[in-house]
Image (cartoon, rainbow, N blue to C red; front, side, top):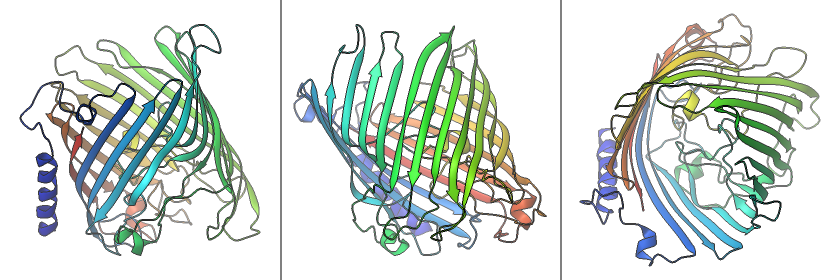
Length: 461
């Protein structure tokens, strides 16, 4: 591990050396667009992130006790806007080093040399009414909607999901926004461990057997400072070559009421989503179907003090239903959402998620300066169903005799801009203190409390 840390430090040093403005601490650092001559119709950005992360006392059943990894993500985005036509593309190279067959490396860490976006867009201006704008994008793109709990462009993991299809956006005169989409989610490839360990290049692909569609509406200040999100998502899946599935046919309506944090004011969130449809009981062809009836809830209350370091304290509660024997299938499917903001870091870690969990907690955030921000958060976690696997761990006691208490989690993060808007350092970690389930379930590793830490540098130009 010492050798890997040394190699990672070298990689981070290279990221520092890559900055042509290392001594520049102004608010207007050098950019790639500037190097290209600041062309009026062309937007170009690029970033490189190098990270070292380590996990001790693995919680996932059947894997090695300890795991560590170096990941590097390189991202180049360009969009030409000739008005009213836009052409955009993004190339992302996500690689991992020093992994092994007993680790948890997956397509969440590796997706080498992938065209994440490639689209043509048209902007229609106020065609649908005075003060409105609308646009249509066709091709491959990313989706980032609302609270990002169900549909998001993930940032903490080394990879994310993109979609091929069509996306229509409308903005009203009152700043309301409507997004409609019909897409084929990209299946990240390769997906076998041997190829992932070798960082093999294989283009992702989509299939008409896997479709994600829906609509999202946001209305600011629907009542005073309260904002409203409403959404409806559909997921249709069936078997395709080499990919047996549970034939998910899911509908997910939901909504969120929220007030953004403002110093000296109480802020809040209340988001609820219900899921219905049907799934097969297994991936075996011809397996019986079950009706789906699942739900998730996030409730949060916060207060931001009027102080120079901008402290904010919040309390929250999250619920995601779990499955029980007989009757409907009741385990909530988190779709394409981001887990990091609510549940803690993903990547090699990531035990908590929006399925079979009941979890209260609190969080203290601070921003002492324009360059530095940090937080610490705590959660306790119980299973909703004692016989279903807990959250994202894979740990399960089908008899229910290990009880419902899973444990406590503490996680913290700090970020600092070494060069404002150009070079940022980040470090964080989490500890999962095992409760009875994680200590006694039949497939639990029984290594002890899981400890995770990471550090990274991100250069953006």
